Image 1 (spheres, chains in turn brown, cyan):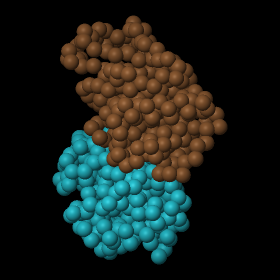
Image 2 (spheres, rainbow over the protein chains, first blue to last red; image 1 turned 90 degrees about the vertical axis):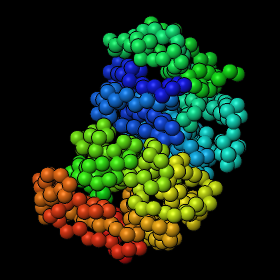
Image 3 (cartoon, each protein chain N blue to C red; image 1 turned 30 degrees about the horizontal axis):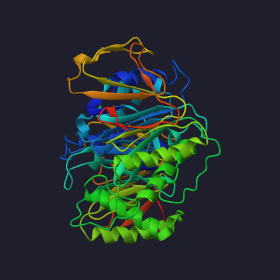
Image 4 (cartoon, rainbow over the protein chains, first blue to last red; image 1 turned 45 degrees about the vertical axis):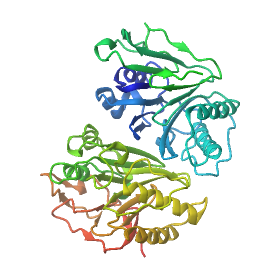
Length: 250
Length: 250
């Protein structure tokens, strides 16, 4: 989720976490990270989201954030363990970066000899370390502007996607970078707001009651969360940047 | 807390978190990190621990860990914000490192041009980044053995303590490094276990009922948590390493 004002994710997370072991088979752990200014609240658990006490807390506690990344895991590489749960967090350029991956990379073992080394044993964390290592190499000690960052991430993501499925999300708390390898959708909710109905649970929310006309919220997912809204599919190989609740113009 | 078997910290955290705004003035945020294997559960909040929904969860949820670092904050440098809450987490040598600091460092602005840059604005995070940067410089890409690491951390901590108070804890999930600048105490609980009574709340626990004879748990604190046990004070300038619930022999 990427927004122009701090927004809670209780509605979307309720539908999403149901897929972690109940309406879907992603039951090998889960995680969520909320940016709050430069800080991050990071929750991971190797239990299924549907039965996790932390997931229960998050469903009841409206943490407000402009950038949130959540993930439910189906283990492909790396055992079911806390260190293998997404999202992953690292620091680069004095900012925290949060990353989650959907997919499976075959034989992806990049040289990681710099400051970013995987702690767990997933292809996903290797890809994250590789992205940050290469960004550091290209841009040195100072974070570049968004267009340069987008171009670099597009090129690096295309390279990684050569090893397998690489649907990914990455954020530094100011922008949300999304790469689609096979399947991702997004929606931008803005004035006039309507009622949305979850696909996975019997729950609706009238967003006009909980928003102001200036609010704008983009939600990006692997499969649409609601059954009565139009979700836009990404093209295969597309990399998009979301800022203040909308895709950045090309 | 450092233990030889995964142990929950519910009892200690109950007394500890009461100091975060109720029996003490450390009300500018709090945090706790639990190692679970190589992974870390990291909770931070800029609200007072005594009224935080996450602190409430942790008081009720017996997360078991061999290494836990918790912190309640009284802001000296850096505003009350999530990115300034301890403990801080960074990765070095493919392991997560967790750090918390009690004290105040004056004019401590080391050159941090390498891979560890502060996200927030505290003296504490600068000290943490400095420690990891210098460890990386000394030992290169491979983590050294405990004695070498202890010697290096002793020297680096003494240097930092030249700028002010530097009571700190640091862990990579296998050992807990503790430096005392002004005030720290520890206790090793082992067989035969007895009953302990919290100093800050009317709560006791008979550890013999919740342990096995092989269990050993070291708890290190800035001020003793219980009123009926003997806590050993650290010497000023002392750096100690705890492994499997006991101090490492010199």
